[in-house]
Image 1 (cartoon, rainbow, N blue to C red):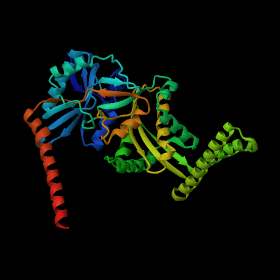
Image 2 (cartoon, rainbow, N blue to C red):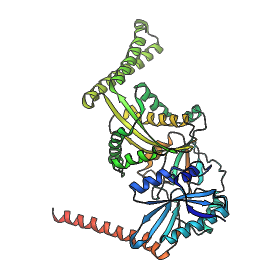
Image 3 (cartoon, rainbow, N blue to C red):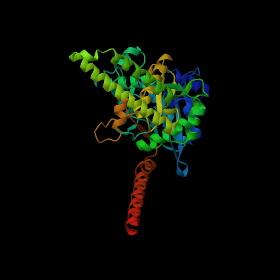
Image 4 (cartoon, helix red, strand yellow):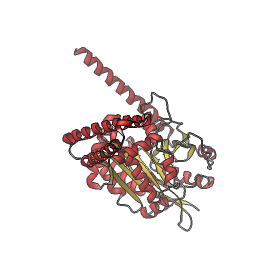
Length: 438
């Protein structure tokens, strides 16, 4: 006889982190505790246990309080279970729904990271070894309602992402990078830029770059305390880790590197027989002279940057989450200046190598789009992540199990409609006010 019960937090996390197929940081103890502190959600660490008190399935359920003492539950990235075991999934669903009903939940939401399509770096579809169609049908049979195959960021978690298989050797991984990505990493290295691992004290700098990116890319970031709390909680748990990577430029080092390159080119020019140049030698002199002028201009440019901004600058800051055998590029912020140094590309490359060195198997860039139309404002984000050669992955999407149809209709249809009407009315009133004041 299987029963669903609140289980010891450490036992729960050990089960999740070691699960062979469904280990995910969004089901971790760390995410539950973080959600409680910063998202005002109530976490429940539930385990389905057998007669020997052995955990056979588990889920982090996050409770969101609603008016009139109602609530809903969300299991981020779904139950930690073998979805191929239909009877086990059936029992888990039944027990979770019973639990939710007792709490006056109007629905339970899951979004399993079950892959339904995958394409490699050449845009060739990769055959899948999972039976996602059977799982899809099973979830429908169990009473879950699929929320559609969304194409952008309408859901709780991204439905699309890029994932790099780090079990490949590094040479193979690099070979999948786009040509421009390789060139830009090399330029960052030639400019003697550096990538270092930060500490809690660097959260302030990370936050600064996140706000700059927010303003530039028109998305909503979080408070500095949000990132600081996330960093502290994930580094306070033995099974999870948050790491800051800071891409820096030391302008003195960069100028010296350029001056060194200039000296090499001057030496190459000096050995050419100026008085008796062949056609090929003339072409080489022309090319070297062009390189010389470009480097001199770059030296002058970086000297001016140094006068304006000082010697050392952090241009890129990324936060990586590690959990089990996976890592996620959760947040990335970049400065508005010196983008031509391509420190951002080098920062990505360095934490990719870092994850591989730690025997991480899957490197997830955490989110992209499915709508690849040219007018999609997120297309640039997609194209940037694509350049690193990961597999383009599409997940199954969100499912709601409705436990109170009337309140579910109110919450998911009428409330959003009312809010949209209020926003439109406010905008119209503002336009009229501006017009009348002219």
